[in-house]
Length: 472
Figure (cartoon, rainbow, N blue to C red):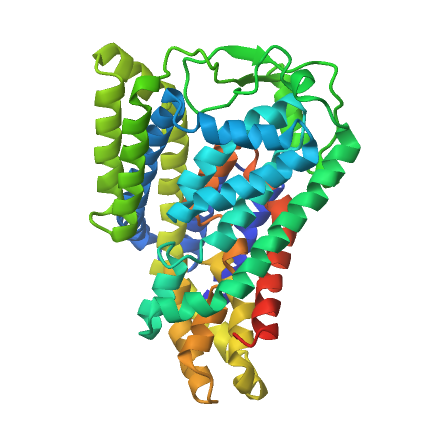
């Protein structure tokens, strides 16, 4: 019964947000509350929610202060040189812009944090997508899928969880998987080429001067305020977006008169004399994250406080920077706490456990010798419908034991378990995806409808490459 209700709850949630019958925050709160009552555990709803909030509170804190920190870094111009290089490569060509999005997302993903990747990528690429009237779901799709492939880095989370759950070395999981993951990253680049060609065909190609009109090459976009508003040219072609998926954001752009925040290269928030201090602080922060010197929320809290104090020593300026990023902070943290209700009910009622047991029990005995491949296939839906913690600590050990009974090593099972990460990064249970869609001003349902098929394909490419190379 709990198995059926668990799948029904997830399906109801996805249908409601994809058809835009409910907002994600409302659906994340109300749907699990109703199902909690339906399973006869309504009296425990408060306990489940508090437990879920307690579990995700560090994530919410990390996102809040990370948004402030990287928002300040964008305001002061830390990422301007990187984006200038991307813009020179893109040359206002839709195909190059989409490829540039994939490359930038992959490079920034080296820090192992999806929220950071999405903040920097969207901040850099958003103005070109808006100015050329490109489909914003193409940007969110490519960024999320590229980050999903790179999320398999040992310090990214899934690989470390798999290593911990199965008591193997993370390097023994990741290093042999590098060729397969490289093929997956190549698949993302090819996907970016295909989607970019579709956008180029729909919109044509402008010169950089035509695309940016009065703006020079250094035009960026950031989450922060204090930037001058500019309007996109009204003569650019419009359309429903790649594959018809871009209509929602185009409509929203029309309501907002196609306005967006462009970072003026002469903006008052620039701090060129402090560039190397900010660069060093960011490198030190990322190094401390990788080395796990402190919990990530604490690092970003300290980093945000230091960045604000040094770059904006006057209190009115600090308040202005915090206020400039307040919308993003509120939207993202609110979504995380709403997701805590969903995960709290899913876990507390035992739905996750029953769903996992049912899926494992449904595997025929004849598939035993192929448990690594089975694990790879199951990692797609399971890491999408449940948290990484639930999958790696709850389901993976069961799959590993089933494989061991047929001579399949734990290492093969562990390697196969990470192939679903390109899809996982678009899961409604991943807080970072709300940073992505929120900053890109894309409806979560539009992003899901457009991205899932490409993310599944990318995951299957990684799995196929792993099998072909004899890794899995």
